[in-house]
Image 1: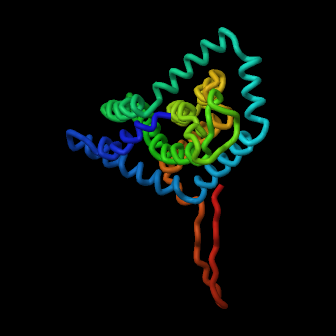
Image 2: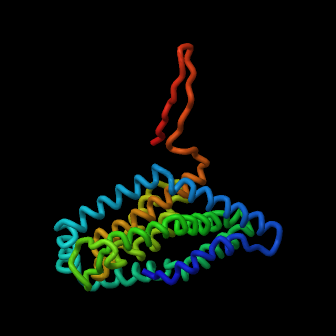
Length: 262
């Protein structure tokens, strides 16, 4: 996982706010507001619960026979020339999606797409949505990779040894899935949306095929990309908090109504 790129991520608020004209400044300000809203929601109860559920599933896979069995299946039964070619393609997708490459691409898409809203608005939305999902999910990616302490297949057996290593969550799976899920969320065509969602798992599966990560590790990377993208869609839709409290008054007293939105 490219931890040196974290320094680039720390500079993103400044990059997002950079503009050379008033129109660009307005767009950058809007993007900054969206990012702030993303963080407020993503680190609230519901998304954190979703991340915790995925982390629990990853723990079960890693600390049982599942990881070893899936790894054996990929290495013994799926290896071949076609598999090698596909794995190479989707590993390259994961490489290109690393922040040092993808962040400039997302920012350029956001800026260039915004120049002609009628023609390229989808390009601008794709760039902004991809960047925002990357931003809100990366702190969790880094934290959980350390917390789990998982090793690569070439380094050791499945299982967690907290804080012992930094490969418990796959960066390729996370970064590679984000732009594909962002594209999926831009279309109303169900067949295309579903195809893109399935495709978003391929950078992750390529890492298992190449024996670079266990399945639990790529699952968690993909899951973080999925939850982060859901956060962006939540902000875009202008939805309120999933957990809402409403005070109620009655003739003989009062109460509090709790509403959980699913």
